[in-house]
Amino acid sequence: MEEPAAAPTYNQVAGDRSLDRIGALSDGLFAIAMTIIVLEIRVPAVEPHTDAALLDAIGQLGPRFLTYFLSFLTLGIFWNAQHAQMNYFERANRNLAWLELAYLSVVALMPFSTSLLAEFIDLRVAFLVYWLNIYLLGIGLYATWLYAIRSGELRPEATAGVQRAFKRRIVVYQVAYGVSAILAILVAPIAGIVLMLLTQLNSAIAPRLPWVSTV
Image 1 (spheres, rainbow, N blue to C red):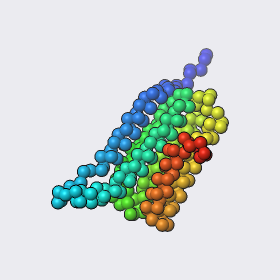
Image 2 (cartoon, rainbow, N blue to C red; image 1 turned 90 degrees about the horizontal axis):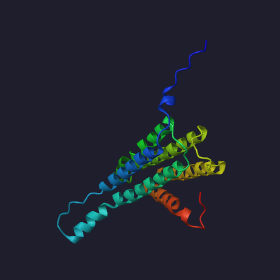
Image 3 (cartoon, rainbow, N blue to C red; image 1 turned 90 degrees about the vertical axis):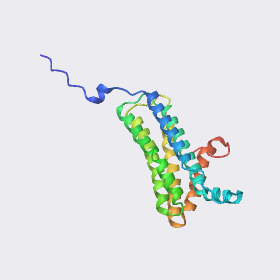
Image 4 (cartoon, one colour; image 1 turned 45 degrees about the horizontal axis):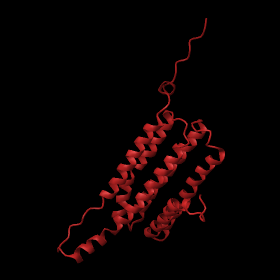
């Protein structure tokens, strides 16, 4: 008599996930986060109703404009990074889908950490909360990529060199963000913000400049 077949696990029954649906959810959530951060820049109430008073009020919004630009760059960089990874995915199982959702849950926190930094731009704790948000984004990217490698979810084009390139880029930029956090603690939060902004500009622009190494 034949042994009865083992009952399938839920992961086996659930099967693969649609990469298109994961991408659509990601695009929508990134778009919402990018919109919310600009909505934090509110039109100021001005008294008296003069050009000088309006200019002064706009000047006081400087921290919010700075953190908006910083966060828009951050979200753009991490959206591009996720998109680049997904281009090499052959399929997505339930575990990979949950890793992507965990990554997106950290993306959804960006409006909060941005607003906190804008409100308390001179405080180290506010910067460290913002840095932690970016650090967790890097962890999410790295964990997703590592799982895709180990579970065989990648296309054949994802050679060993491609796999190392993705890992190296995440690690290099997370180290740079870490240096920004150390600078903010030892010197001042604004120093950390400047270094973080330069790091992000390098990430966004450097790959298009032939004389700059594409980390």
